[in-house]
Length: 543
Ligand code: VG1
Ligand code: CO
Image (cartoon, rainbow, N blue to C red; front, top):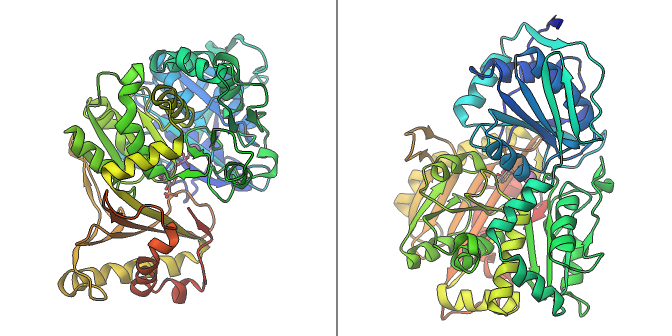
């Protein structure tokens, strides 16, 4: 085999963010940009020789090109085998499962998740370790350090591999196995959920719409929901993955999945509506006339998980990201299990899951998952919901209302200010940080502040510390405002403001969320001077 060593010079901007390296497609298309990052990654993975690497992506534009580059570089860098999804497709949770199931060394997932695709859209590369989870910060830090000093990368000369057919190829002595991207994942779901009970519910007339948003979950949802569970043809819409997601924005929220939302609020609504994102790890859950916030969904899934066979023995613990509402905390308390509060990003759940300290994890950004893989999992959440609906024989709205009556309701909203000037956003955060001690001492607008800090996390499993994870202002009535800057945006900065207020079980649960939070929203603007500093009258996206 002839390994080609190619000289290169470093790029200074290859620092992975919340979930891998994400940039515009055109940025990735610069000569050597992909190669530099992939070589920096491989250089940071001692012990890779002879090992298996899993590769797949969400099918977005540039996916096919990068997969071929990665295969050649893997061969030149000593991997023994590559497993790649047919057509270059693997959802993020499916990739996590494949890595674990086949005991691979790690995997590369090509995705910018919910960010738009196409030639003018975004692309991304993330690395998952042998536990199937996103690389821990010590790996991503090492990759970044390496990318700053890289001088060469290694590749082999070979024709493109045909990824269209399942089969085995040889690339300079390395085996490339093109696998069915769906089958192993379906088999895993079958071990967790009562497919018979869900199928019986569909057979009895239960109706659903699943919007795959022309992203990666289409084939998975079709195989499971229509194929295995017997939902009628057409239940899965926008089910064919397209390189540009059909021109849409594959973010399953009330803005980008508005068609689904409007349907679910109409008289023609089916019993259940759901959607997933670009790479299949997020979920949107909407019942007839009832949108379920991701934070509530996490709490509800945790409270009812024992109804599904895979969780019938109960939960070891629950973890949520810091900005996620405290609804899950109340469930953990009642179940008598631990609740962990971690920084934003799934990588922080990995150690807790590996150590068996938690079973279910979730983030306010429409991500929930469990110890079945080491990523959040959109379809998993949908199937757990279906299992709960089949078991409880109640509608979504009724279940949500009962939950609030039992645990209270955490009114919750996130306000995003996207693509604001990066310097302005940093200054806003820096200045707010300096105000925090004063808030703790003097309160805010007559309210008593019981918590005002920049969140840092000590991992209870490996003792590592992550600092600077978001500014928190907590009040004595359980209300909270959190500010942080996104680590996944690709243009300017995105300021995220998370607002939460607790209403007890015997309180009023049917208020409009924005109205219920109005005073806190005003307070958030006042204390951080959001409008003045960003020049924006209103958030870009409210979820
Ligand atoms: C966002 C979300 C975070 C999520 C991350 C990756 O990060 O807030 O909860 O883990 O996206 O999700 P940020 O740094 O932009 O707030 V995905 O579906 O892009 O893999
Ligand atoms: Co995603």
